[in-house]
Each structure stands twice: as structure tokens, then as C-alpha cells.
Length: 202
Figure (spheres, rainbow, N blue to C red):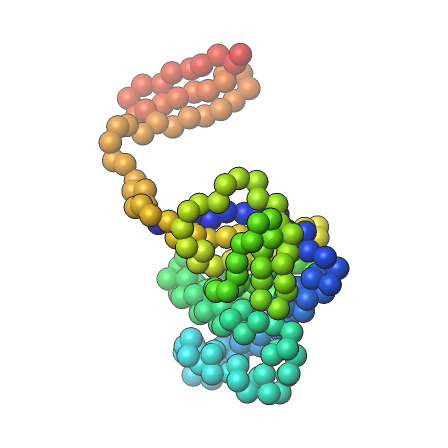
């Protein structure tokens, strides 16, 4: 079973600069790969496969050395995986068509490995130990992925995804279903398909 925990981060100025470079590399590669996919679809009527996205990286790192120096390689691999998933979700009707990423909106990067929790710090490759605020006890399990994000208001967060023991919850088919309408005149009107009950506003 997977369990996610959101953590507030307080990076230093140097770490903010390093994160900014990583955000920029990930955003640039997403936009480059998305554009390549759009052009390929126009020419062939087919989308690019995940292997095609990944094959782009070695040559791009030669042409643009900052992709190698400014960003952890696994982060760029995650960009390829996430873009591929975004297209799969689009074609299955679960999401909208992937869009180009903009610099002045929410930024995020994903680490699939080598991130460690050390006391009140998150040890991140190429970034260092980032001061973190853990609001509750972390789950006991394997840390699968870490997604670091920067909001439009300038706050940094990390979403930690843990693999913990236990089975995922399954929907229950027991009992009845009721519709509840909250209002001003009546606090709530509840209908279970057979009868309607009104509850006065306290």
C-alpha cells in the first residue's frame, strides 16, 4: 500500500538556486520532448514511446551540458516517464492533453531514488541537506519517490511517497447511499432514495 506525506521545506539561498536550475532543466526537457511528440504525431499519426523520450537524453546532454551539470539524471528520467503517463491518461480519457510548462507557474521535480531523511533534513542529490518541517510521524516503510515543488507564492514542499505494509482500502457495497443537501434555511436535507428528512439549522 502506498501512503503520501507532504512536508514543508526551508532551503538556503544556495539550495534555492540549485533547485531553480533543476526545475529549469526538467521544464526545458518536458517542453522539448512534448514538442517532439507533437511534431511526430503530425507527421506519422502516432505518439512517441517512452523509449524514444529516453533515447533523446544522451545526445541532449552533449548539446546542452547544463542538463548534466545542473540536474540529477534520475529527475530527467522521471520527466520522460511522467510525460509518457500523461499521454496514456489523455488517450484513455482520464486527463486533458499535456501542456507546455511555464516558468512562472508551479514547478516540480521528482526523485525516484537516493533521497534520505536525516533528522529534520531531507538529503537530496545535487541539492544537499534541506531543512524540513515534519508535522507528523512518518510512515514506517520504504521511501519510493520524493516530489519537490515550488508554489507560485514561493513556498517549497516535498511529497514523500512510502510503500507500507497492508492492503489498500476497497470500496464497500454494504449499507445505503444518501444524498445530503446543506443549506441556510435548513441545515441539511437528507434523502436515501425512500424518504426525505430535514434538519433544522442550529
